[in-house]
Image (cartoon, rainbow, N blue to C red):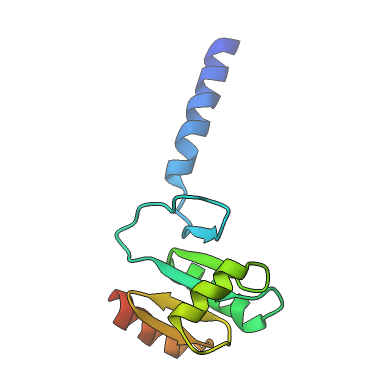
Length: 122
């Protein structure tokens, strides 16, 4: 096989490889990307702080379930704090919001129920 054909084969393989891998859920950190990816799922917003272990559990849970979400870091972003205050009187994190519903704190059963009610996910 000629060098040109090898390069062409490798380039084609690299182009097709991402399509063969399972898609990871889309996580957008607020302020990093202007336009979130278009999805059939209503937008899910997760408000977190850096040192919060429950926030990390909530993020891991959403990723495991394949739920795309926008992550707002309220300890670093004043606009995120204002946005969260408009959505809830609670000041705790994690706070998840989707489809007009919100939930403060994290437990897998509560998130299961929230995702079913807010998004219709089983």
